[in-house]
Each structure stands twice: as structure tokens, then as C-alpha cells.
Image (cartoon, rainbow, N blue to C red; front, side, top):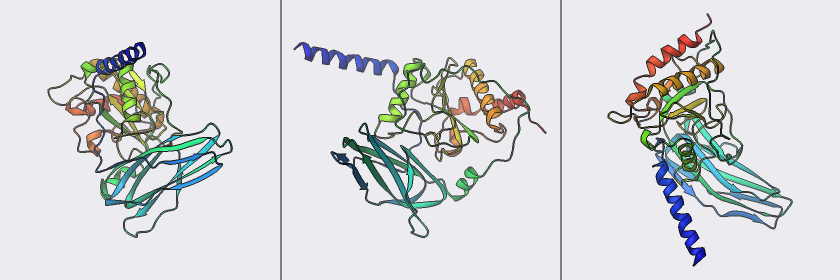
Length: 335
């Protein structure tokens, strides 16, 4: 009875902590294609295993697809994941391409199918399991993808801008990512709002941990880590998410995009953008633009520019022109 009482108390405590943090979802895109598969691939007591999924058809074809895998590795095991895709026009399959925990397909030409391959090598003969993979995708269209993937015009800031104070992952007690990131060159900045949690539900670092847990564990996501690169609380505190040089999971196609999320719901009649948010947004965007030579006039977007979502809400989106102007004043342009 004592053990049961302890378990019951722990459950109540966990529930209480979840309610204290508030509803955690964050305003991610709703994919047109979404699956979560438990393939049951495992290697136990053997040195080598090769596991291939069936070919999955995509109808309609997609030009954006994010594949995430959850793998439980034995201590001495090396697990390699691969993905290949079928061109929607020619019907030809690409070669298998290796990835770690996330594969971001983004192309002008859509794909009509995909297939995964897992190879396990374990000299220790332990037990490794491919526990789950998720795939989420949608289509933006050829014209939109050409514009997004096009190399921006060169921009050289006249002045470096210092990095503002940022709460590190260690400080907000982030979980480690599920594996190695895929890297990119930051070229665009996309501003978001969480929608849920709202500003009143914000509880500091606990809110950031809640968003990370949702992104990594929920069947709708299952990503390698928190999707955003930076998050800003209503109090102006800036939190580090993924490294800005790692591809995020916040706005398909994600590649070359840095995601900055303001915690709260800034749709009409909801939360108000605080002066602390204004200051922190301008500071972190000025630093990013000066560091990565991003033109604030043309390469700072709202999530809604790539989505049917209202994100980052009118409250933030309507301020973007003023933010761009202030950032350009901060960093200048070298002629």
C-alpha cells in the first residue's frame, strides 16, 4: 500500500507540474501528410543488422518532408539511418542518403514517395531498437520553393552587434538532442509566437522545458530537439534553443532559416507585446543579422509568410517593419 501511495503521489505531482506550466503546443505548421510508425526493427545478440521499410507513397506529392527517428542504441552499437525519395515527375528513386536523427527534404521538384533504411553494427552484441519514426510534410509550390531556396543578395553590415544575454541550454536544464544535428548557413530569420502557452501561462525555464518535451516526445512531432533556435519570454528573457547553425524544426523548409519564438498569443485581442519583448527581439535579431550578414530589410519574416497560420500574431507581425528599421540603424550597411 505504501508503494501504491507513493506512485499515486508522484502522478499527482507530475500532473500538477504540467498544469502549472500550462498548455504546451507552440504554433507549428499543420502538415498535409503525417505518420508515426513503430517499425519493430531490433538487433539483439548479433553483430550486424539491415532493416528496410516499405516504400511509402505520397499522394499528393510533397516538396517538404521532415523525417525524425527515435533509436535506442546499445552501448557499443553504431546505427546509421538512410532515406531515399522518388521523383514525382520521373518516378526515379534517389540514392540512399545518410542522416542522424532528422532528415529535411526541401526541393523545387516534389517527391511522390520515400523509403528508410537502418544499418546496425554492434560488436558488443547488445540490444538496439528503432523505436519509432515520424514523417510530416506539405507542399508550398514550385514558385514559392524557388524563392525560398534562392541565395539572398549579398549584404555586409557596417558594424558588429554584441550578443545579448541569453539563458543557455544548461541554465534552463535542456535535455540533450537525440543525435547529431544537420547544419546549415543562416540566411533568413522567421519570427513566431507560441500561441499556446500564452503569456499568462509562462513560467520561465519550465515553459521552455515543456515546449522541448512536446517537440521531442509527442507523436505529432517526435523531433530531435526543441524546434526553435531562440525563445523570448514576455519578460524579455532570451533562451537558447537549437544552435543557430543547426537546421531547426519550426517553418518548413527550415533549411537556412533561424526560428525566433516569442512566448504568448499575439493574435488580435489576446496578449500584448511588452517593451521587454520589443527590446529583446531587436537585440537578438541585430546580433544575428550582423553575425551572419543577413539583410534585415528583406530576410526577416513572420511565420505567416510561409504558412496559412496567423503566427506570429498581428501584435508581433505588424511591428516587423519597425524592427527591421531599428535593426538596420543598429548594424548599418557597408557600401
